[in-house]
Length: 168
Image 1 (tube, one colour):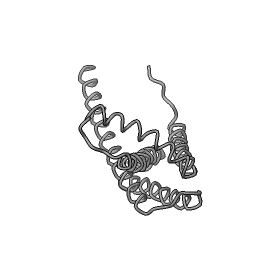
Image 2 (cartoon, one colour; image 1 turned 90 degrees about the horizontal axis):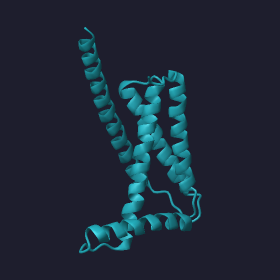
Image 3 (cartoon, helix red, strand yellow; image 1 turned 90 degrees about the vertical axis):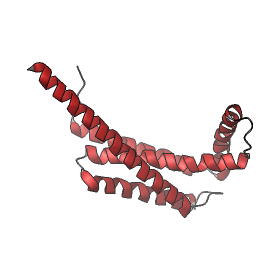
Image 4 (spheres, helix red, strand yellow; image 1 turned 120 degrees about the horizontal axis):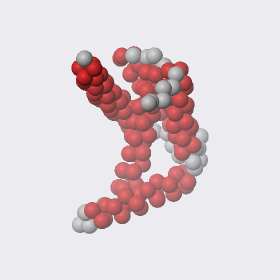
């Protein structure tokens, strides 16, 4: 037996996840440069240790790894935001290209606002290159959502077809 939530409850939960993820992005962007560097520095050290274990002969500089970590954080944060936003739009009744466009616009506008926000945080700066990277992450997230939902729909149709043939 499956638990079935009302559609409007699922939409509310979906939008709550979007706003929560936006709040986390805002919180991380509000960190002063020193706090942000400490956080990404810890992740950079972890990545460096993994690289040294996997490829000990590889020559990487900690600055290169730090840049990689920081830029990937942008990409994946906005990829997930786009997935959550598209899901929320779809759960609210949006369909087709319009739902994808709405999710993309919401994600990119939030990326722009995030970079503007960083202009007012000591030691941080807003960069258009980050908005571009965030936008690419959003496109990848929307594409990923579509691929996964298409496969899930196809599997659901196959299961329903099997159930119908087994019941006759």
